[in-house]
Length: 579
Image (cartoon, rainbow, N blue to C red; front, side, top):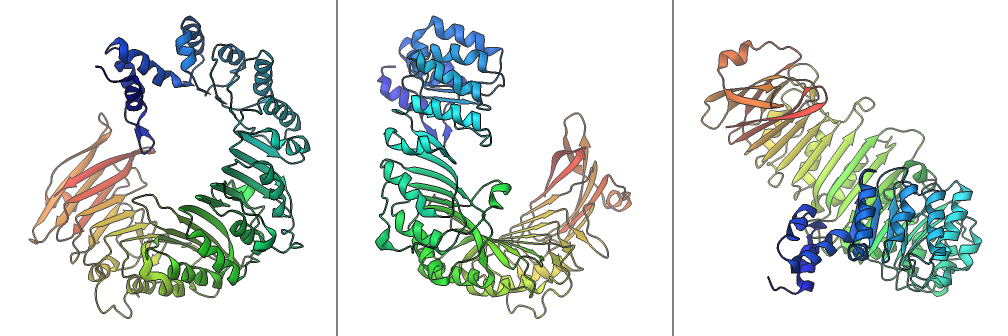
């Protein structure tokens, strides 16, 4: 093979959606093809070393000492074992071009070892040093500050923690810095200006501004007193969200590609910022228009309930693609909180659409989100609706009719912990829903004849998923299913039970009106279900014991009935009837 080494390296290192095309064992096999392939394959395999066991480390050190060529290939070292300090210096001494080091828990010894290596004139190319996870250890933070200051000329990632005046005043000495993590207590978001002015090449900013009082509003936020930053591409922030916060972001960061606000943070951090709902409609309108130009964003903050509908109305009027994607609603009663946590997630990645997740709290004045469905229903492709069955007694089937009536483009509907009782279809819809193809019922309470009533409305339903549902008066629970949806075009029914079930009988009625019977039993040796034809007699006489399941599916076009149960302990097993 006479391919140039650059081409071979590109092939070995290529990936699809962050998944390597060739695995490490595949590339090791490539080393055996010829001498020309061997060196390139070794460069790929040794670029990143991941250590999972203490037993391998001495052998690795010996190999790298015997082959300086392999040692020069290593750029990234990941140590996933505790008590690594004994080996760290020995490894770093023989890796001349290492630029990234990550360990399980960075502690004082970790940073002290890096300081020692620097004093030996080693690790000259180190640019990524893992930041501390324990921010309450002042001694650890001091050693970390000394360590990163030694490597400041090439360092690309830095933690700036509270009261660290030394690092704050030396930020201009980090010319290669690309990512900054800030942990501070302040009530003035304008304090970020001083940091950003010293780091003109910064592209990623992860900032958490903790406080016990709202942000300062002494200085008015407007476009005239804020100098825009055009280099920052990613902002991941934990803020108390007010008018001043949103306006600062709008005016300051003009070229963002990714924006995350109070997103995917620990609960203890989130509680420190969800303390205010001081946002006006005009500012919210500006912010909604602002995020339209950002390819990826995920934000979460508290809003007064009426602002939810206003915000989504603004967004849908200006959004270039009139499709929102999933909408998730959580409905619980809480007399103490009178606001709503609102999360928006949108991305321009292919195969994904705009998504809104709205977490409702304390809607004590009835189902206020019915108005929301009326306002934006036609833009939705998916809805997830959750309630608290134990505390809410008045969520009836009319809400489902309301969804089907106002969401003409809906394709997937997930109902979780939702009561659908006998009033479903009062008044009935004039026609069936034409676009809904997936219906998921999770931990739902279903009234009598609910499935049959749904069948009249969901003519084009293709897949039905039922997980741990129950019927109050008779029939449906996690050990007995009677699925009467004959008027739909369902081809797949998926049932999930949380109980230990070892024997299942299935009765199927299709378009010919002829019935077929099947039985499944759990095979301990294969840890799976085995299937074979059965008879009506076996179906009817099967004892309704705890470890048995009876299923009757009446659908015209059903082809698959999939069953997931805990047949043995907590082990989930799968069985399928192919009709």
